[in-house]
Length: 236
Ligand SMILES: [Zn+2]
Image (cartoon, rainbow, N blue to C red; front, top):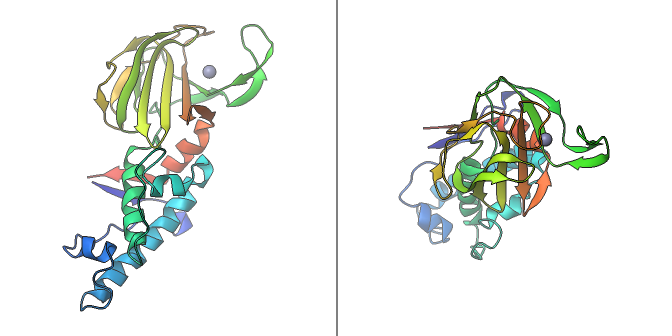
């Protein structure tokens, strides 16, 4: 599976690393003075370019690339190997790009309420809106915005029928007010997989999807993630 940047307008391209047998030795710095040093240097250059492109694309998400380099929050400490560490860094960031929620949960939608402070639509008091509201016809399929494991599927007070997905790297997504869930807690899901149907369950004024992204448990604006996703395509 490759991650392909489609941000042509930005002049950013993510180039897959050549599948070279020498790669682990390059990362370990074992070839620095050998006949394969040139090959390692080429891979490192590609890796550095990819890291730059990924950094640009992820900027709007507020995600820290260093978090991804190190395999995410609470991940194992990875010692920086001399020279080769850009290859290893890129390989970890590439893995992250394959699972982070960089897609949209509906194929076609309109945004009816943005992230941030607003007047509560039910009691008209000032409140923090911790996600975005997306409108589409009732029972439109809702899809996982990134790969991961279902950490919750069921009913939550206020949210109604809800699915939550843990993507790793401290990042979770939440899909609320569903008419029905189509996955079970503990299940692995792929990006784009149908996880439920849009509804109006819970504390809702009408059919819509309430979509949240939580980083270390704190809500982030999903719009930045959806925009970043428009610059990436995850393909075979
Ligand atoms: Zn909402």
